[in-house]
Structures are given as structure tokens and as C-alpha cells.
Length: 386
Image 1 (cartoon, one colour):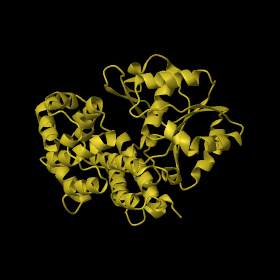
Image 2 (cartoon, rainbow, N blue to C red):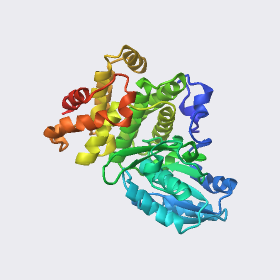
Image 3 (cartoon, rainbow, N blue to C red):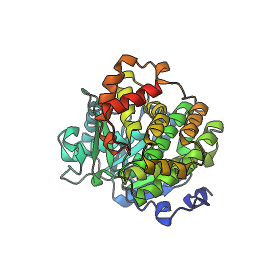
Image 4 (cartoon, one colour):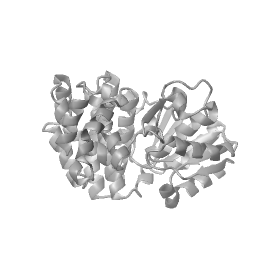
């Protein structure tokens, strides 16, 4: 049986980690086939009509139709927004709100990857509190109640199902706005690893490396706590083993389960701490050159680990997570995931590195890196990755 306890046997994790006691949401349901409880969970919330927020790819897998059928058995109607795009912008949120506004909904279901979760949360802010996403940039700025959210991840990457934040890009400036509110967190997160079996290899690799970066950046950030560190470690241990297995054997349900659970643990670590400059550096790469987020983070991660080693506490944490060279271990993961190309082979214009370095050092997550950074510091890291 692929239970949380079985997957974590021998990892020496406290019960409060296994129970997700520090997840932003109220409850986590985990296990193969657990999508079937979507209807009963929605009914227990008191829902009569739900908005499913998803992307075109997930819509083609049959997961949306299956969800509609499950909800119908409990008398719950559905409106579908299936136009989620990667790295959602304020414009994407507005489109989702337009669909939601016409539906008289009382529940939002995020079905998909992190972009679907972010769009669902962003829609919730505007639908219930009005204004624009800029009004919620920061923490707990929504003054009115928000609709309940059920999060159903179909990837193993962001861990957004365990977080209270929506990451929405300004459509004009490309600035990533972190909009956090306890009311935006999922009432229930349903983790069904069977839903991740249809992920293409490239998506599996990109999201998996992103999840690993979450575990490792939260492990050393300057906001880490004993609580967040336990979730970081739990996420890393599952993801480190699971990624190679799932890339070699995509139909391995246990490996898929390890990845999904590890991603959720790492997401919970983010909720209780923060990230670092691997993510700060990734955003300009995506904005200027369209490099997929997981690829951008993965390219930067080993170089960020090398940079952070000047901090004795960070180096101690790295050694506690890996007997050998952690940066080399990440490079090995990237090679096996076909993600090892330097920035010079990903279409990056070297002349823009100084500009990107200034942009990256000004990103919100940069301030939480264990080693304080300036634009000049980040430029060194970019050039190492070039």
C-alpha cells in the first residue's frame, strides 16, 4: 500500500511531518485513486457549484471529465476554465475571473500543476475581494472571506497545494508577484499519484528538479526553522531517490508517489520558510528568453550551491543531506534528466547577464539566500552557469 507512512519508512521523520501539520491547508489526502473522494470532500464543504481551473493538456487526459462525473454524483455542478498557461500573468487571472463570475460558484478546484494552482488562487482573490492582483502583492491583504479551494496536483513540482501563496506575473513588467493569504490556502489537498502517470518525460524532469530546488533552497535559507528544515529534509530524501527512478521507469507508481509526496513536503517547507537565489536567477531567464522555470532553476542550482558554501551553516546543512558533493549530485540528476546544458546553449544572450543579475538580486526571494547577494555577486553565478 502506497501510504505516507510506507513511503517514509526508515526516514526517521516526526509524526507531525507525516501528518502535514504545518501545511498551509487544513487537510492533505494522499494515495492512488484518491481523486474519487473529490465529490465527498466538496460536499462536506457545502459546495453546490464548483469552478475547475486547469490547462488544455490536463483537459485532454480525461481528468477533467472524470472530476465532473465524480462531482455530479454528489449533486455538484461544474464550470470549467481550461486555458491556464505556464507562469500565469495578471491577464490570465482576469480571464479566469470572467468565467468564474458568470457561474455563481461556491468552490474552486485547482486541477493541474503549479500554474493551475496559482491561477485558481489568483482568481479567488479577485472574485471575492475585487481590485487587481497588485492589491494583494504581499501577505494577508485580502479583507473579505474567500471561497474554499480544493487543490488536486497532477505534477510533482511546485508543492503549491500546501502553500498559501499565488505567484502571478505582471503582464506588462513581467515582475513576479507573490500574493499570500491564509484564506487562499487549500481547504483540502488531494494527492493522487495516479494523476501524474501521464506526465511526459520532459515535464516530469522539469517539475522534479524544481521540487528538488525547493527542498534544497528552503534547507539553507535564512528564514529556515526547525519545522521547515524537517520538511526540507523529508522532501529531499524522497525526491533524490524518486527522480531517477521515475525517469527510468515512468510507469513506476511508487516512484511517482515518492515524487508527489516529496514535492508536497518541499512545498510545505516553502510555506514555513522561503527560497533563495536559484529561484531569483530563474525568473529573468524565463522573462527574457522563455526558458522553462524548472530548466532555469535546475541550471542555476549547482552553481548556487557552490556559491553558498562560503556560509558555514549552509555548508553544514549540505553535508547533512549528502555524503558526497551535493552540487555534483545535482549535476548528475541534470545529466540523467537531459537538462545539463549551460546557459550558452539555451539561447541566453551573454550581454544581458549584467542586467539580469540586477533584476535577480532585486527579486523577493534573493533576500532569503544564506549568503547576502548584490548584483555583482549574482553576475558571478550567472557567468559560472554560462
